[in-house]
Length: 257
Image (cartoon, rainbow, N blue to C red):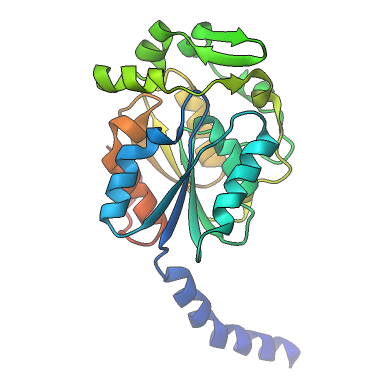
């Protein structure tokens, strides 16, 4: 009898839950990765704003995972409703931790890390090819930058040269210890997730990105782009975010652009 009542209750409530989940999301929070700042999202922001969304880019301090998560949570606290949280590159680590916030209803990873809770991501990455950017990383008193040749040729490959030089000029020094910090949760285990793989990535191995996307059972697209697909393929990244927000009809099957 109890089982029958439970089933009946579920049948009554299910349409409500389905309707709520299908409601379009108005707020998007973007988190930039290492060796970048919030301006790296400019082209995506313009497209999302044109679609009527409220967009905020976190100015990620890149000093520690705790500091970056705190900065993201401060932005999440200011949102007036459900949020799609988006991370590029290293900030996939931030998204995986801060994404546990109850306001976050979907996660988007753009050529990004996506660690499991407590995972040694350095050890995981070592199972995949080391990419050319690594040779250009320079350490200055505990903070790292990418030298100009490696930044332009490998970090920003596929980006129009003049824009790549602008991005080099505004790159944010990144704490060397940042890459060893570990998360305590993996929000992608409980939240709908989307992933944009960069086939021409010279910073994170594309096969590592595919592994992460498959592990999280993310809706995945693959782009003919380098690491900075948020710049070189802003339309495709904006479309994926709009889809995560329920603002765009999903593509059928495995999308490739």
